[in-house]
Image 1 (cartoon, rainbow, N blue to C red):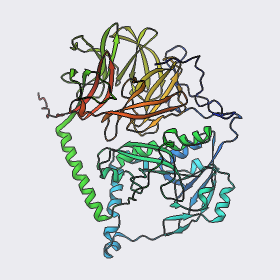
Image 2 (cartoon, one colour; image 1 turned 180 degrees about the horizontal axis):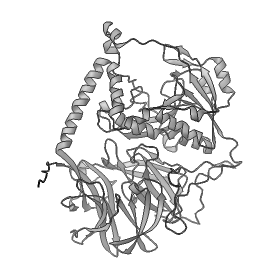
Image 3 (tube, rainbow, N blue to C red; image 1 turned 135 degrees about the vertical axis):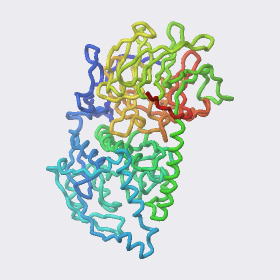
Image 4 (tube, rainbow, N blue to C red; image 1 turned 180 degrees about the vertical axis):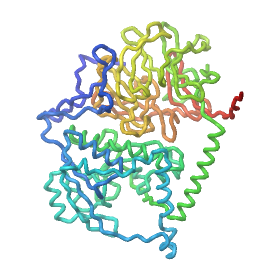
Length: 620
């Protein structure tokens, strides 16, 4: 750790461009109130914006002018979220909606295809499967529900276009419509309709036509989105926001992310959170464009697309019947195994070794924290007055409400009996301990309560009192603090748009642990289910700052990735994966998600499978 020279001056969102200074944003307040009892970013019933607002004033010449390309004035629910985001942002003007009036095309019925011998080339079976998936995927199909845009587009110009179609795949806009669009002086045109665009339209907006592709363009160029990833057993699904060019799927990547792809029969269970999360990407990219002149994130600038792979399509009826049959058998077997076995978490302690250097083998296990009828996870080793303690979450088996407990690690490696530390009416987990002003302090995940509390020890290690509320109105997961170069950094996973708590890492900055906490200029600094969610305290090894991160691809807490942080300031963040801890290397388990090191000891929680024996009901 190093210390900063001079006092901290808030500069989140400030950027120098030659001699031109592009303002200081008005930031969302997420620190404690003046009395130390709380405060927060949002009023009751609202969701605070987790990124600093772009600057106001004369430093920016004009607001961004955006147009939207649609197939009609009704869109899918996730697309409406994108438009809502833009409409309520005071530095964006949505100035025109371009509506496609596509030429009518008659499609042959399934009976006509059957009579003509084309049943293997048509997709009635797959289309029926998608319809059923949206109804049975436990509400995850709500992302695709039809949502009208009329209330949002009221007062906005609507341009009606009949495109020139080539082979039923490519759309070109007639020259009169191109001329009309040039008159709007657009910065960006968002494509939510039409087919594959070609021609002059791609060069009309100042920063191009932007379009989503829900899939990895290097591997899954076509569609249906998320389906072939599930069929092929992929653990993650990709999504990009790109600037379109004449070359299909070879546009400039503006935003890139991944979501977990869990084994399932119903594709909408993967699509739902995947699409909802992506609804925030347009505004984030426009914010960077507004503030810096470029919409591209630093992480994506060095990760332009690989040569595009083959195009995937909807499976024909015969292929769909075979593939869906295989998926149904696979799902039935998995559900049968789930009935017979369940997952149990426990904690192992072992001698700490360098994590980035090759070793002859895993160190032997010194102790295990587990108890009959309890699951244990989220270890945090902490040394106080030359004594080593391990704080952790424990949950009764079969229940979902955890509490915080502690054991003392004796000099010979033995453990004391666990003692309860914190309980609440809601779930508690992920204790994180640190020292501030000579006193032990503890952060505890309490996402179910919608607030992140900071506790101070009254009588260490058993008695604690709430000192402040750091984030209010947010479901913040796995809060992890770092004191680095004179500043405090708070790392948390936050579900901002409905994509789940495992995909996006947000960072906040303050001068003290009490705040006030300011959002990092690049929030979310990571949007990747494989390396976003925190997995324990950061540490330095061989001069490199290492951040343990959960790999949640495929399932929650699958493994641990070790990320080297190359740059960390209030305005910049760059990390790269440099190491990995597989659960099998720790003890033959099937999952691990938290690492803690102190006093030459390291603790890791492990997930293993255990037989589930049926319980006999009591009578009488």
